[in-house]
Image 1: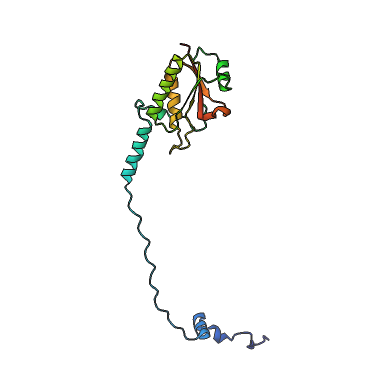
Image 2: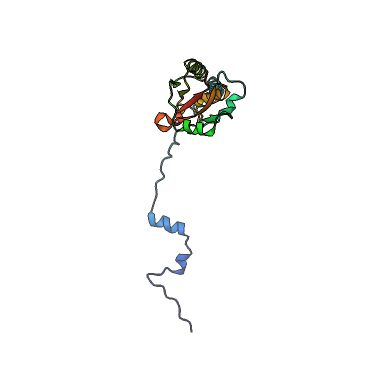
Length: 195
């Protein structure tokens, strides 16, 4: 014979189970007061309008000024990065001459510093240096072009201009970035053809 369930103080009665939880909660906390509505926070300010076309035009003008004096399409030839080594020799120059130049075994008899020059001015100064150095009978010159750390983009403009100009000149036999003690990748030693 089954035992009948007897209510105990710990155990709710079956008729209490019929009450929903919400009414039990309200009975337990008593009367509540409704809070006044809170105003919404102010909307986020709209961003200031930007003259995007003007920014694009200024960036294009800056790019063109850096590549000033270059033939159309040559600005895309700016491939040398900040840490890249400049290195070139004519076919008639033995490889050992380039190695000696890379080690700094040729004394630079003339030097020019292109810092703070734009592309056009740098090109003119490099051409003038080579003409003057050959006129004085110098065999090796050093050109300090910098590493391009102040360039807005990652391409060192002066370094690329110097590389292009030196490759185009028939009176340049070879050139190589200077050893670390003489400027490293921020300078180049240039070996000139005899006069």
